Length: 89
Image (tube, rainbow, N blue to C red; front, side, top):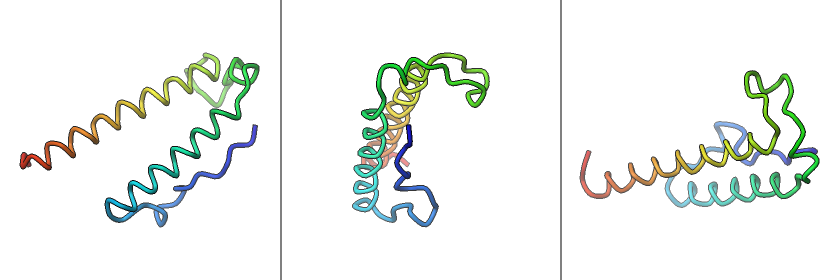
């Protein structure tokens, strides 16, 4: 499987400002979704191999882990945003 190029692969591509950050988030979400949707069951059940270091499970487990981390860190961002907007600094 060939993954599409990441839309935010360089520091120069990082958004400046809230509107640009939201647009970048939508772009990266579309990129990540395209990668996941391009995976078939056989591909997902293959082991990751040496590149994964100590993680020896199938690719589907790694994708689930990445999605869990995305949710976790997104929740942290939301919490910090809410604390900041409430005046807690």
